[in-house]
Amino acid sequence: MVGFRARVQEEAENLKLTGFVRNESDGSVHVESQGPEDDLSWFEDGLKLGPPAARVEKVESNLMDVITDEEAFEIR
Image 1 (tube, rainbow, N blue to C red):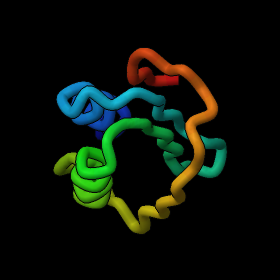
Image 2 (cartoon, one colour):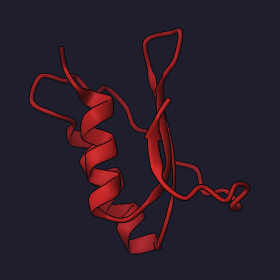
Image 3 (cartoon, rainbow, N blue to C red):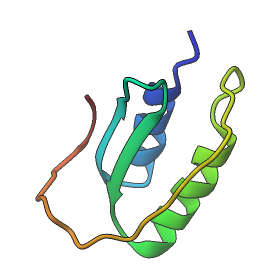
């Protein structure tokens, strides 16, 4: 068990980001997060590393307007 989603949630909570992480049917992981730009940049750098047992091949990032009023960061 890699624990990638749990690690993402932990890092997001440490940075006080809101949003979610979920597995996709193609085996990828989808993350949406909201917070201060500097914290989001730090978070993205962490996603590129992943936990020790994970294999991160690619991280894509898109800036979007805030469309939800998420109050926490959850695993879906």
